[in-house]
Length: 147
Image 1 (cartoon, rainbow, N blue to C red):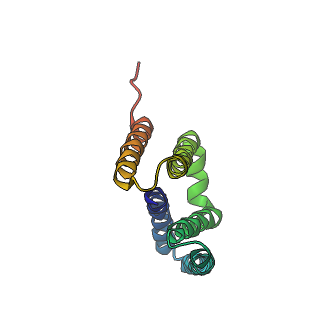
Image 2: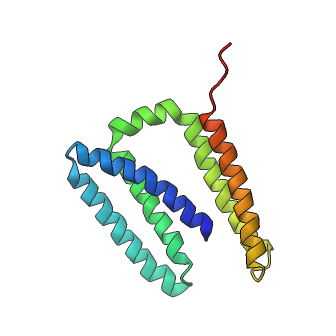
């Protein structure tokens, strides 16, 4: 569950960047439309999945809503994202592949480890996610030595 919340917070940072930029360029209709659609999506998915399964699906549906909002802002804010995506394409791919790997590792932990060992499971995931994310962040921000 922590992995879903972490990825949601990461996407929230990107969404906040887009939201702020759109507010300063006076395109509030896009912001309002995006947040309204994401809210409706989140509420609808929560009513369906939480009732059908359990409360842990609230974190998963929130991730889906943030992912929708992230893609929505990419589509409607092409002047910022087109340049960023062209410039940082390999690094963005690496970052999103890392997020996918973390979610897959989380799934494997849930399938193959006993859910009763919550403390050990949580500490192992925390250590593993920290090592993976800090390694990727280091690779993304390190400067190459000029020769």
